[in-house]
Amino acid sequence: MKFIINREEILTPLQQIVSVIEKRQTMPILSNVLIVIEDDQLILTGTDLEIQIIAKINIAMATPGTITVPARKFLDICRLLPSGAEIKFELQGDKVKIASSRSRFSLSCLPADNYPEFAESELENHLFITAGKFKKALDKTVFCMANQDVRYYLNGLLFNVSNSKFKLVASDGHRLSIYEDNLDQATGFEARIILPRKGVLELSRLLDDPEAELKVEFSSNNIRVFIKNLIFSAKLVDSKYPDFSKVFQQEFFNQIHIQKQVLKDALTRVAILSNEKFKGVTFDITPDRLKISTHNPEHDEAEEELIIEYIGEPLTIAFNAQYLLDAVSNLDSELAVLTIASNASSCFIDEPNDCGYKFIVMPMRL
Image 1: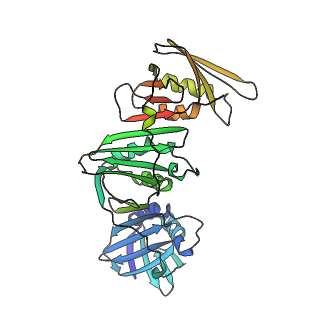
Image 2: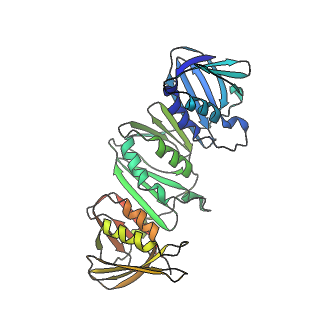
Image 3: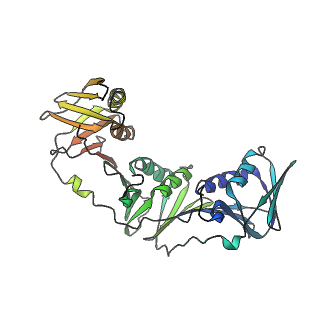
């Protein structure tokens, strides 16, 4: 097995694959990248058994074969070679020889026969979506995913398809983000799946070309996404996402309209003196005024008064400042609309014109 390839052709696919491979592995071979040459294609595969990325590169000068090499060492060699360098790769016995100009490397490798197969069930559903549209939906929701929550369905992202519409939902139990958009083609099916946290973060990183069209295939256990010359696969979270629709079926106070940037700046300033652990700020809302205030165990205090549009009863409610900042930063319009539930159980943050993005924050008890 041998091939010659330009550094630029192999570097990016290798970087994308290595990010999936965990540094500490129970099986030594999982620290390796699987290299296969067949039908004038160089195929690179990396997996942690939960997520897998395969990259396919067209190659002319090559002798077929398969082998696995240490992923990070191989990446570092390719990365540190000069730009435009030609890399010669050859398997000799149980070693791989890599040569480029005056550089020579010899890597110990493991046979490809021992490389674990990524188990995938039949993927009966499929849809097409542009990378730009999917990336925007991910960006507006991923930061709400829980991290290592015992309710493991929250350590992921709900992907809901309903014929020609799709919806992404993420929540950590204290806040919830919902993003809806239309698909270019009707799918003719309804489905709900939960993508795992690590898979979502990896997938988001791979969507670097907004114009690329993605083919998404999934079943109740697996998802596979075709991104140009890459194939991303992940095992899904085997659970049911909680029904969040009840949060919309309640009484609300009148909407509060406020300039997004003004609110963002005020929150950022007041939060400086909030309790470092809880980041709590209090909202005192009266018609045409909003007072944001905070204090901390060191007896520091901060407050800001803002002019708002609001008609209704005065009310006081407290929130985590960082959660509000995350929500407001993701609005596209200049105006933020805050709608507080009449039992003060939640606050909706969205845009004045009917948009596909909604953010819900649960209040704090200070």
